[in-house]
Figure 1: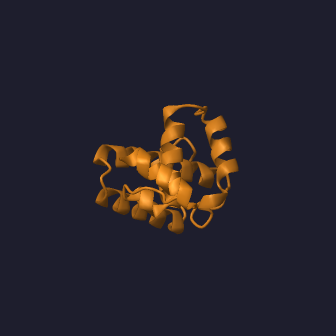
Figure 2: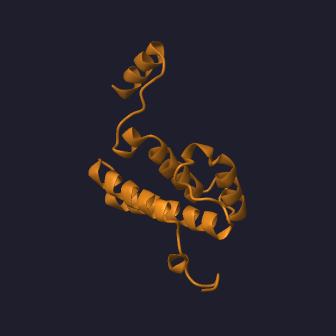
Length: 122
């Protein structure tokens, strides 16, 4: 297969395939709208294909070590400050914190912060 073929035709790593499947399944259980979940999955899939095509290791297992790859991806795809860059960052943040994936909130690390967050939510 050549690079001119659609990204759906390229082979992905099994662990990343499972990650995408998990992400979609969990996101659909929460309050996120189906159309938004599809956008998150689509952008995450593009990023995973890019990682694969540029010789980077699978993202599964290194979710907290992707900053340089995300920056390179955004630069190469010219996504800096773009809607797609924002969608990718949202997808990765939700993967890093499953509570966000299901529509929940991140808990504060300090009690004082939790009080401030609670005030904002109400």
